[in-house]
Image (cartoon, rainbow, N blue to C red; front, side, top):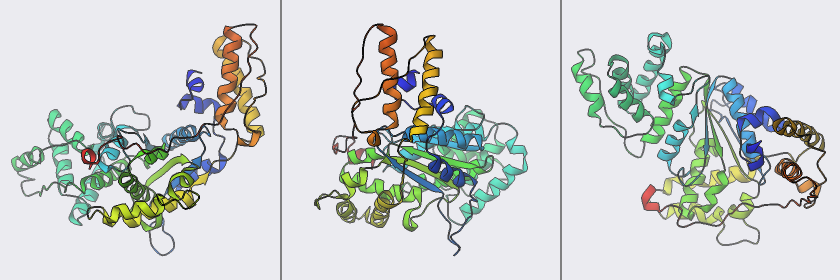
Length: 411
């Protein structure tokens, strides 16, 4: 009840109220069941991704919670990442670390790589296949040789401190190459094993590739969920441009490179494109033109201009709109909500009054949940009061925050 009162997403609320978005749920279930090597008919991999769009209070975070529940039940590792100042979407290293930190392993509660390495994994055939896969990727130049080398050391060296350091490096922390290279040289079987660290600008992508392979060695796959993507509006123009490019990469928009065996879903506000990408009236500051241009002015980021445009097109054209609250669904949720409130407080909650405010068609699911709770709180705590509740529509803040984080601090 406290989560519902505050509008905070909760897996327990999902269990009680379910999902009111059957189309989005069907699409997501299809992504979970899709083959990792599916193609478009011409041999090209197809992205397994879904971007949903809805207004403030439409239930986007609730839906992602529901997706997480479905993923875990289907034996997927799931990471639900909320975009924030601490997790800037344009910064690949921080985004990867957040995905690992937030990862939930089905039926387990520990850190991702600790759980992946737990049990009898190293004695099972799956570990051998995984190590051969990683070694093959290193030979093909997809990842640095330090990845298979670290696996050899982890598997053969019982030093708990060394293993913890290696798990930390896989998770995004720093570690000296010598921590892996020295044990290799001391092992007669591994002295000739190459151990070269990834280049700084490639390490996040390589860690992502390695983590996805490791997860698939033990589970059906990895699901990454991104919430509050609209917060990229508060970044500087260059940071937004890099965020659009990152969005294209994660979601596989218009041929941008992506990991075909990672299921990705995200949520963004439905008026983001009109507010930032192509505002009405032909504003010169529209991101559609300004963002790729900002990248082209920086030689370091110029190659991202195409992906930046693809990311914006994804938001404009491919986001699945969330369905407006269906009267039958609203009535059903209202009944369950009333019963839940009555049970929680040992108090017989009455039928809620009709709401005042926006027309029925423009109301969000949040209105139908928080307003009755507020009314019942008043009636329960102050008997005899006659509350009159008026709902209003809230809009997200799309104003740029130049002090969000200095570019030099995160580049």
